[in-house]
Length: 151
Image (cartoon, rainbow, N blue to C red; front, side, top):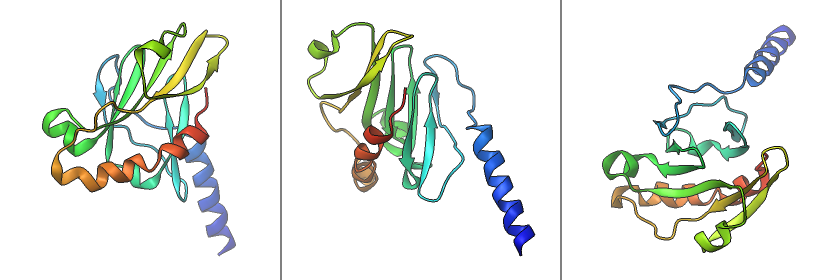
């Protein structure tokens, strides 16, 4: 029993150390990301930042990646008609985000890159009717994302 537990622990540590796996990531390409999990959360790793998400996000979101931001969508709405934006994370060289976005939260500044990162709430909630419950559940993770955001 101890050997089994030790083996599982070692396997878990190796999986976590290996990071996440991505499929076909290129600039401005929409990708569904798959990540290794912990008990209640999994890590979302981007090129310049990372944060944790509750397990219930797995398989329920898609990240649309651009040069200056990433948009996170409820997957069913996004696949059906391109709606379902839950939130975005932007990187700015200056403080122009204060004029460009009215509903945002400042996340931090990256000294090396000289970038300000902000969490942007959607101005308008649009999603397909059948995805309303999933969309609202995804929004409940805002506090986890904001608390665990790391540059």
